Length: 450
Image (cartoon, rainbow, N blue to C red; front, side, top):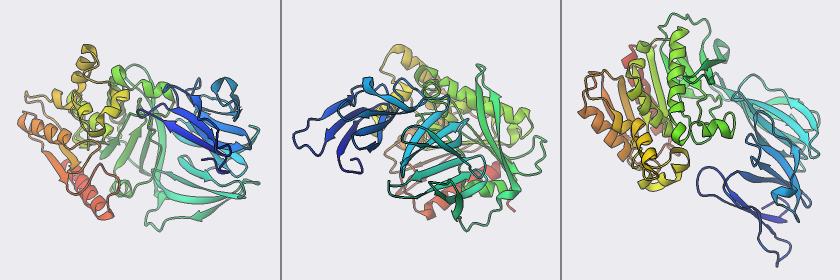
């Protein structure tokens, strides 16, 4: 419902991308439900209204997103006018006071611009560093807004901003015993197998020696239009304090460069995601941040699938692997709980013979080697009440690993109880799991706790 309670908007979706949108005038009891968009080929969302003028954020005919306006009497796409046009960077919009704040992803980093309701640029918002900004919400009568800022070495802080002048001040910072000035977080670009340039953030303690011996944790996801933007994490901070390097590439399949980037990592293009991740590992080794003997990889859910797939394809490249709550059986994933909803990204084995063969060729469960090829040390994590990615994925994967001849490194599974896919865990469970995961990584990399 719009903030003035004049209009009702109904969004309908069948999977993780694309929606239909409908409108009803709540001040007219006899008003019909009006169709705004009637297919699932794009995402369109109501942002705000100024009287009868409606503003929508959409990627219809604009894969990177744009802000449009139209009159409530004519809400369909053929009547839309651009307010903030599409650019080469992915856009998301918030209505804040009497302004729009445009959040652009520029190589997976935040850039914020303030516009008035005519679409005129008011100012570029100055951020504390390179990283991720979020927030910029306020009702129309407000004169200030608040936003958060973070990156991999910068604990999340909240800033207050004057909407008229653009002046900002620190509003809140966490009481955390971590000095970000001792660490560096930089962005690099490397080349994937097919020549595509991929951005990656690398964070480490200042003064690092590029001797190929640094313990390094490479984290990836690559799916469902989800963008990995820099965020601070306490467990990662401990890793950095112990001398570890933390690297996060922005793989295809995510949303960092819009719909085309997402599509390039889906269905029959899914191998691109694995190639991007493997190329990230090769870059870190080539540039002597680390070596295969000192490299650990981690990913959860769709990222667990990623880790399982690249282990099979390049077992020589990693010393430790942590596939968390992963989708490991690509032939049957759609038969359990919400799995059918992922078909827009993965395709299904019953779609066609071609799709079946493609899925089987990378499915982590179905490609475990059994010929003595040494695999990295592997710790699989799952939980008995995971109704997103059912634990059977991890159970079958662990059983097949342990039954196969993959060398002497440990192949273990950690099964949490009274827990699910990860969200909503009490802090005690989070600490217990992080302790087990990082202890496993450190033990197998030969690290000592200081």
